[in-house]
Image 1 (tube, rainbow, N blue to C red):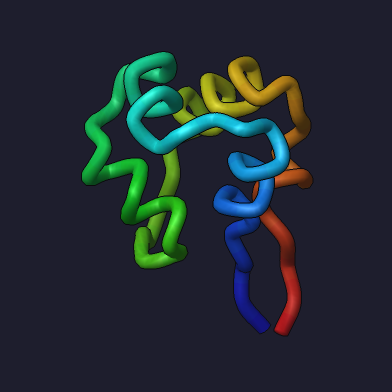
Image 2 (image 1 turned 45 degrees about the horizontal axis):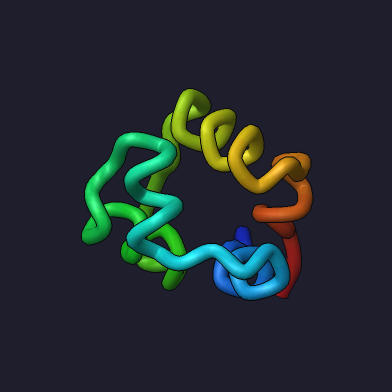
Amino acid sequence: MAINIKLAALMAKKKISLTELAEKIGITQANLSILKTGKGRAIRFSTLEAICKVLKCQPGDILEFGD
């Protein structure tokens, strides 16, 4: 079992670019890209909260526990 990141699909649905989201939440594009591709090993709650505020979503819309 693993944590799957659904950020790319959510960003496409909300029609927001990596650059725009990175600027709005205050992290680098490189760090957001690592998170978006699922290559990150951790996420700060403050970052998750900022993403949810900008995308108007819940953490469960971004993170999923499964195979």
